[in-house]
Amino acid sequence: MQPMVSIIVPVYNTGQYLEKCLDSVLNQTYTNLQIILVDDGSTDGTSAMCDRIKSKDSRIEVIHKTNEGLGYTRNKGLEYAVGDYVTFLDSDDWFDIDHIANLVQAAKAFNADLTIGSRTRYNENKEEQYKKIELPIYGNYEGRSVIEKVLPEFVAASPKSKQDLGLPASVCFSLYRTSLIIKNNINFPSERYCVSEDFFFNYRYMLKSIRVTIIQEYGYMYRNNPVSISHTFNSAQLDRVYNFYREVQELTSLENITEDVRMRVHRCGFSKVRSLLIRVISSSLSFKEKVRYIKRIISDDPTQNMLKRINCREYRLPIRVFALLVKHKNYLLVYLLLKVKSRS
Image (cartoon, rainbow, N blue to C red; front, side, top):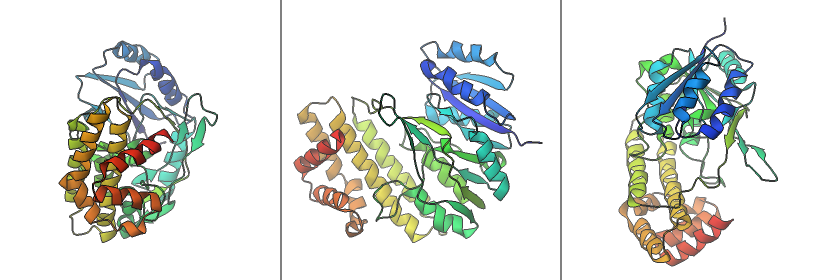
């Protein structure tokens, strides 16, 4: 008999996308599914839509809860998951028809605890609407090679890579063994406390994984929303980045973690600082307010400490230039450099 796959779909005010999302799950060639919709206190009629959709198929379960954010909503879904495997789907995205079948086939072939796929990025109203996203490594990894080969690429790309990220932090592209999650009490922190709540779930899960397979599977259709960068900014967002960096440093203090992983932590943190600066520049703040935040961010101890631990000579030229400007707290040139980047 086919192993059951639990698919957790957090839902919050995404009624315009939800039907397409759920139809893509119901039409999967792989049929032994438990579909868990977790409504995180929607206020736009999506809650009622979830209840109507439930009548379409007996495999669908609907859970309503008060609004707590994405991390805790996924945790609620995990409480109800009874499948042999579990994966996640954001309610504004969708699956290609063979997506689950391909993940399960790979997991069974290698008896993998973790099966990592990629995604196809969808850009609405663009000339190139669909783009497959390649991963830095593929193949089967077992035992110590999970820590030495896979984990570093998950934390951040190698210093010489043109990309900040290596393997995707999102849980949506992967398939997990449910029993391993339950046995080790692995869950998500709140994204209201720190950025990248998926990172912590994946990191802790990978430390408990014996076998990991990384495959060329692009059936997760990711909707790239160009307006997702908020037009507002506040200091709480900065605190969330620093909380992330502090928590990751604590995670990677374990004795069995390689030095390569520890070094990539600083690149990972610094990339989030750079993304935060771009967010400031893209916001609707006044020029004076933007400059004030940029000065604070690049002067703060966490940012400067990251730079002290990064060997900038190993990075490509644009990152070296940016790091040098931040190190010397040249906030006006940082503003101009990132202003150009945000428009590209």
